[in-house]
Length: 397
Image 1 (cartoon, rainbow, N blue to C red):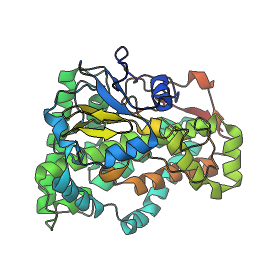
Image 2 (cartoon, one colour):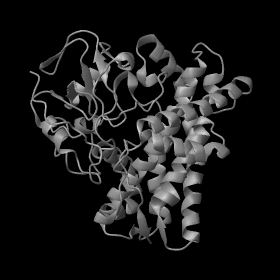
Image 3 (cartoon, one colour):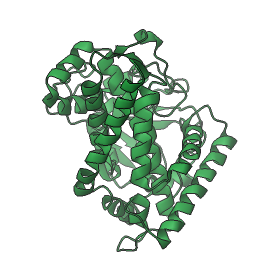
């Protein structure tokens, strides 16, 4: 069954944290369907069922490397990541990059960084209090917090932060012209390549330095550059947006916020539930290409066809999550796939969870009585970005 291909699907630009109605239809459907995306005329498979998503993302017959030469439908004109990124690798090459990345995100290293993460968040909240009783949580907290931790983790010097931020915004905004996005991506690649070259001579104790140190997983300069590029983007933009998304959920549910303030032990489960509930991406992520005919979830994907999975939809699958569209901060047995699944599972997931937990804790402890300073419907959103999140989050306390 190929399903019906509706008019071109462009999910980017959904309001606030509304769940995409196309994804709702697909996750409720009996099997995967083929859709036509914003760019490209050939329909693509979109898998949304929790079990099917885990099968597709774990099956080596669906290639990420083949994406680079395939003419598949996409939500964006220009692929934002660099070609040597682990995202576009399979097999031994992918495993080697991932093994090297694991040296950066060990539990011991994350534990050592916890005090630094907490210090940055606490200092930003204290600075907000010193300035009065009103602030924009994105501008004053989630963005600078995520940027500082991301750049410290990767090894991006402070003087480079403005250029990196400007470039990443252009690359990951869908409204950027293709020529401008490519130019911004090339400029960022050159900047990160210069940091890799410097680390080859004098490595520091950061991602670039660790990856640049020769070992059994020796990576090329291009692979390290791509890893630095990707990690900086995810560490800044993804954490900036997702922490703001979580704060938005709590600010629009004041009883839940007060309950967490009174019972901080419940925050672990609350963060996991918000990870499940929030559809953080506009549309779908990176495609895979079938290298042979594969039968999945009642359909046959033919060799050469493009396949997408929706983690957001899988996290709303009623076959796995009772009342999936309800935010239940005490939900137990939460097998969400917000960080992906299979070989391409986010290597920095543990650090990301620490950061999200820390930002929320800093607000709960440091801003008593915090509430939105505008009506819920007046919160502005990043409607042209691949990652969803509020553009600003005005609050008073």
